[in-house]
Image (spheres, helix red, strand yellow):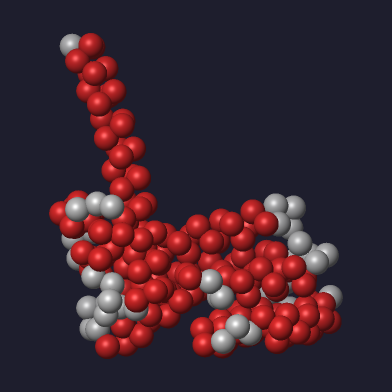
Length: 203
């Protein structure tokens, strides 16, 4: 009996690994499709083809289109949050310019573009709206926590919470501007100005 369970375990682990790998490929492909083609052009079939899996396999992991795309944006948001924290393992209170630049980068890549398509779709899709609203709220809270930690901001001081939120709102605005044109030069000037403002506001 012990031998059978060992064999079962040996077979089960690779299968679980394959399942996780398939799920990850689907999530990454979904974000890429959403960023490139928008909601209308990002069907489960298109994502499955890009990920190199069958439509049936995609639906095994994500029964509905809404399941797939909300999970995809959440997955990449978590990956980006982890990467952002990893940039400053010892904290970064002494280099607020680097923190502001890293936060702005969060809103100028494919994740933001994909999330924007998801928001637009959610504004017109009743089934999607509550899921995206909840997801955006969760991602927003996490990004705010990371910003507070990296900036060593004391939110017990009046106005500090609003200052950090203003930074994130500004970063989102720069991300929107970057969708249409390469706004790198102006973005760098704004990042520099915000870093100086934060040094004054946060001490």
